[in-house]
Image (cartoon, rainbow, N blue to C red; front, side, top):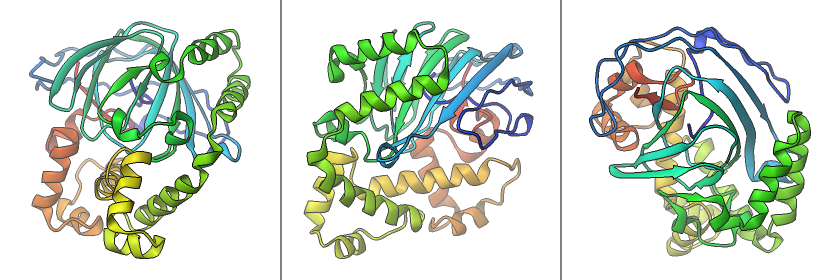
Amino acid sequence: MVGAIGLEPTTFAMSTQRSNQLSYAPKVRNYTAGYCYNEPMSQDVPALEGVIFHQATLRPPLDRYVEMVWAVRGSTFYRREVVLPNGAMELMLNYGSLQRVVAIGERPVMEEHRRHWLSGLQTGPLCVESAAESDLLSIRFRPGGAASFLGLPISELSDQVLPGADLFGRSIETLRERLAGEPDFSARVGIIEAWLLARLRREDEYEHRLVDRAISLLQTRAGRANVGDLCEELGLSNRHLVALFRRAAGAPPKTIGRMLRFGELLAALRDTQQPDWAQLAARHGYYDQSHLIHEFRAFSGVTPGEYLLRRSPDGASLVVS
């Protein structure tokens, strides 16, 4: 499970508190179609036993780099899921069962991760598998945020899932051990903040501010900002801007903009079962409905209609089996 798990949107409400503890009583669907390299989907989906989920935002200056810290513990009703791209990167710490990456985009990989790993920028669907019981903690970096803690071009990590020790050395195992000994989620967040602050590369501040500004413009314009307009507003050449985005965010600005638009579309679908696709296409800056479908398949591997049938309750992934 790479990403916060979700259930049917109508089955729970999340409070606005810094930390949330939720119990779920989900609706259960029976899936018949296959996905993720034609693996058969389960005909009989068992009920959920219960999940505890926490999330928190970090204090300045870390909130400019990290979207949230979240943790989940419990049994889900599925074993395999396809996580959809969102422009973010996740540093995962695992205290539960073995996790497997089955496929990255259209490339089957079957990689195993047990203790910690970093999911780089994913430009396509990421198929992952775990046992029903999960105990995960994640640091979710904002688009362009992880570069200030890594000191290497983020494009080198795109469409990969790498062991945490390959990037952070022994310190990631030390962090994992410290967090294991602290049951209180708020205290865990404080430990993470101290760990991140010790690794924040102040020398990258100028580049981060440029990328952060460009991404803010993309978000304000629903991912539809013209790259030429971005260059003019930031005072950069096209070549410089593209190189900056590859280095700091993992992909060119046009790709990041498309991902942001896709994320907005998924958010718009969260509370509906019968969307007006033509209206959504116009609202989110697609040329027409066929353009929306093409982009949807590029990022998810399925049509919009298939997504509605297979989506996890938070809409961030597709349930496979």
